[in-house]
Length: 213
Image (cartoon, rainbow, N blue to C red; front, side, top):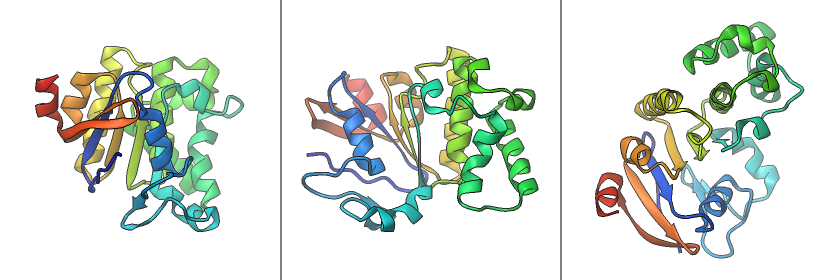
């Protein structure tokens, strides 16, 4: 019983207590679970209940950033390899092009280039999350899905990430953010929906919902 639509350059926040269904909703959006009723559409075309062979060519249009960056990054790869891997998989540019693109993206998320030669175990939670965001952006997705991306960051780094997400939104990327950080949702998101017990309790402009909360 959840229904919403996000437009390019629009950010939606998803809030609710543990067990409310936030992670399930994100898995439905990402195509990791299939809805028992209704449908998910991506850029106007069916996304749920579609064979993976047809969905795979469109997966680059949607990317995800998860709560635990160290768990979502391959521990045996360097930062250079992690950032270039999406471009390798989709055969984007030459080897030199991919290296340059990785360097530009690292600079964009304020990840020190010297640390790109290291592996995730050498990075703080803040650095690892910055690289996770950078990896998700390498394919220039239309929709960025974020599951508690601020929880591993101190307030300063969380502020930097919010600034980056605001820039992405301004450039036309749609955002879907799950977060317990209500001020962050108010600051970044245009709209919000509140889940409870697997159902949507309310939705509307985030600032108005936060005032009521």
